[in-house]
Image 1 (tube, rainbow, N blue to C red):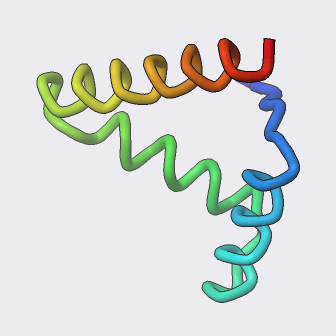
Image 2: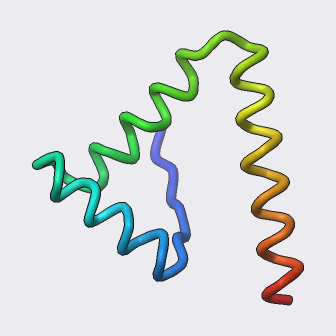
Length: 64
């Protein structure tokens, strides 16, 4: 499965910086982050997913 993500400039910069610090490709780091999220117990995943979605909604409201 292929998924495309739209990151804002700050997110993109932070992902690239962190990937460079770790010596990995930014795409590999993003994939590892998704794998880590999916490997968490369901309760932790649900809490993390809700938090991410809430933050995204807040950001879109501020930008909209």
